[in-house]
Amino acid sequence: MDPILNSGDTAWMLISTALVILMTIPGLALFYGGLIRRENVLNTIFLSFISFAIVSILWFVYGYDIVFGQDMIGFMGTLTNPFFNGILESNLLSNYAPTIPKSLFAIFQMTFAAITVALISGAIVERMKFSAWLAFIPVWLTLVYLPIAHWVWGGGWLYQLGVLDFAGGLVVHLNCGMAALALVLLMGVRKNAKLLPHHLGYTVIGTGLLWFGWFGFNAGSALGATNLAVSAMIVTNTSAAIGMLTWILMDKLKTGKPTLLGALSGAVAGLAAITPASGYVNFTSALIIGFAAGIIGYLAVSYIKPRFGYDDALDVFGIHGVCGVIGTIGAGLFATSAINGVIKGGLFFGNPSQLGIQLLAIVAIGAYSLIMTLIIGKAIDKTIGLRVKDEHEIAGLDIHLHEESGYRLN
Image (tube, rainbow, N blue to C red):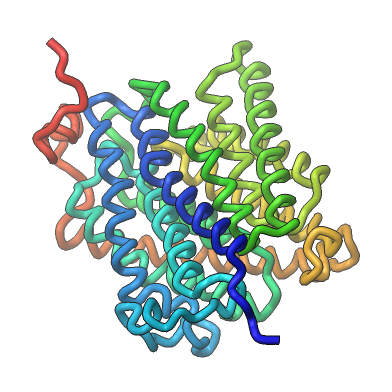
């Protein structure tokens, strides 16, 4: 039987696409914007917005084809429809989701590319030139994100091996975390490297929008209004909740006091960790994954970062990179065909080889993203420079880079 457009699936995917857009603008923008000094709030928010705008264009010019075009030796897709030529006019259904339009699948996938780039910005806030960020976005998207997304989702070599990454633990979270680490290693420590949130209220709103939008991120990756979408929604919420509670417990054990910032960090850690496994695991497994994310994410931020002295300002590596690894391993352990009938399962459900595939993907994607980002960052630094002037960094980027101020205070 030929595929037939399903209006329910199409409606759900339209909503899911809008939810992921909401995650980036304004969700991530506000989440990051509240965590830094008030002199940099507009610049920080701007980084997310400009990332979304640039990726929105480049994705349809060539990005979609490179990820989902016909595979070339496992590395990237063939560019056959530049500028999305003819696809909107054709009313074709998607090969990857045969009950929704191909164009809808394309814009849904665009939102993942956009938020991956925007997430990196949290590591380099308060010290990177805006011009350097503008140069970084298209180069990194082209040379890092698009190939990795093809490897995992578009028919590339990891896809052919059977890697499990339901909604982006590898493609989004590990990828952006390693890129963030590369940039901060190149740029060095800020003049004031303490985390000084000037408005946690912004971050609360941003976290709420991220949590809300993540249902489009994970449940939307079922690519239809199905039982799998419901399952992904439940385990996503579960992991976020237990991640938050675990981080609060860790705060209490270390400092004697629970913190709101810790609670928000734990929720995001739980969300990032469940992302790759959300379409493969049950409720109990989600509890374990979220609990592990709360503990290991906390240790990465509170102990590993100070121990090694890198200035990942808003803990992109510590939360997204590390928790993306946790969830990817979690999928290799706890995936079950009872949740998703198209997979064989993980180690604890009769398929031990899956864990090996997951570990291989972590090493390959982590190394590729780190090395390529180091090369890209070094090239930008040698040409236009990565870092702002010392006096601009000390006084704040809003006024010096944009001639604006987030607050007009007498």
